[in-house]
Picture 1 (cartoon, rainbow, N blue to C red):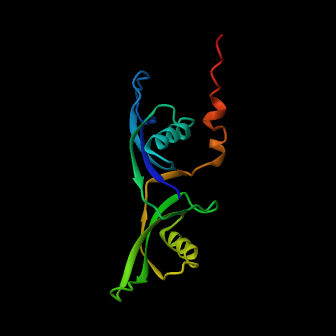
Picture 2 (tube, rainbow, N blue to C red; picture 1 turned 180 degrees about the vertical axis):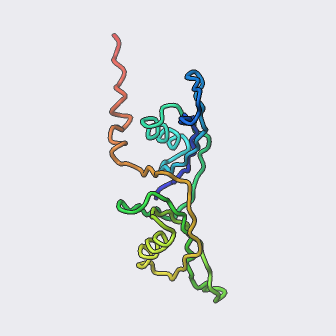
Picture 3 (spheres, rainbow, N blue to C red; picture 1 turned 30 degrees about the horizontal axis):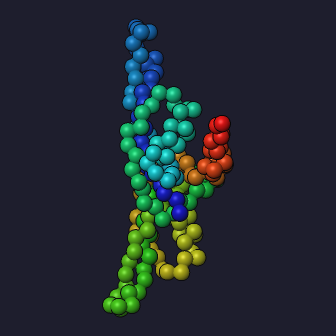
Length: 172
């Protein structure tokens, strides 16, 4: 089961001021940009390392301002659909055997789509095979730009400790 962490980064980006008549080349205006990314990691430390690894190639001078755990039931990534990530809340309806009343359990999912309607439809289609009935109550736009799921190939170089540590040579 994935552990999702929401990481926020901040960096300075130059502003193109081509409208200014006299341009001072020594002084370039910059704006502060904040971006959010979702990382599947085991711990906060791994999430921070993965963020540095993934973001450093495109953004050389940035700082991580926040990393927080994001409780998600599922992430639906569609290759052909949308750059906007939506946070969708679905309520699963079950019958409580003790009280005989209906119990609603919230479940938060993330899906990429072009519009809120498309996000709603994608989650609805994905949950069609669910055993419990459900109703989708919220569809909200997030500021997440990209997600970095766990990649099995990244851990391939890990070896057991017994293979790395050789026995001490005997001294005579």
